[in-house]
Image (cartoon, rainbow, N blue to C red):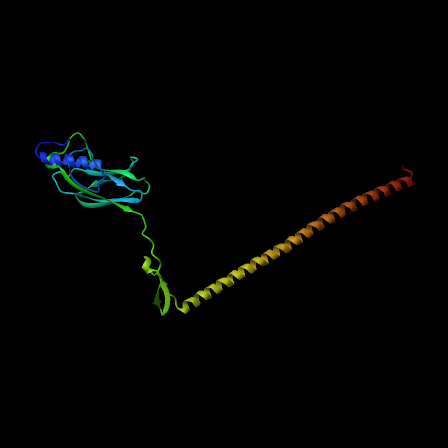
Length: 249
C-alpha cells in the first residue's frame, strides 16, 4: 500500500495519477514505484497497428539493486513482451502481428515478494512512453521514368523508388563471350540428343530382331514336334506291316 506519512502531498498526487492512468489509454507517464503491486495502464491499439514500441527511463535512486520488470499483455491475456527495466534510458519494440487489436495492459512491477513495499525514500522514479507504428502504405505516386547515361548508353533507373542500381550495361565483348558459351552449350545438348536418338534406334532394332527371333523359335519348335509325331507314326506303321508279313501277328 501507499503510505501517507512523510510526503502526503506526493502520495495524494500519486493516487490521482494512478487512478487516471489505469482508467484511460495513455501514451506517456511518469511515476514513483513505491509498492510491489503492479503499476498498470492501458494502451488502446488500433487495427492497423502492428508494432508497439516505447522508451523507458529509470533514474538513479537508493533502490538501484531492486529488480523491476515491465510486461505487455494482450486483450486476450497473453504475455506479449517482458523485460527488466535497467538504469538509464532504453527503448523496446514488440510485434503485434499475431494478436488482435484492443486494450493492451502495460504493467511495471518489482520482481520479488509482495509482502513489503518500498519506503518513500526508496521510491523508484520511472518514465515510460509508448508509440504505435502502423503498416498502412502511403499513396502510390505515378511512376516517373528517368533515363541516365551508363557507358554512353541510355538506361532506365529506379533509384527514385527506393531501388539501387545493381549493375551497368556490359560491353559488346562480354555478350560475345556469353554468346560463345551458349553456342558451346547448344552444341553439347545437340550431341547428347543425337546420342540418345541413336540409342533409341538401336533399342528399336534389337527389339524387332528379338521379336522375330522369338517367332522363329516358336515356328521351329512347332515344326519339330510335327516331324517327330509323323516319324513316330510312320515307324509304328512300318513295324506293324513287318510283323504281319512274318506272320507274327
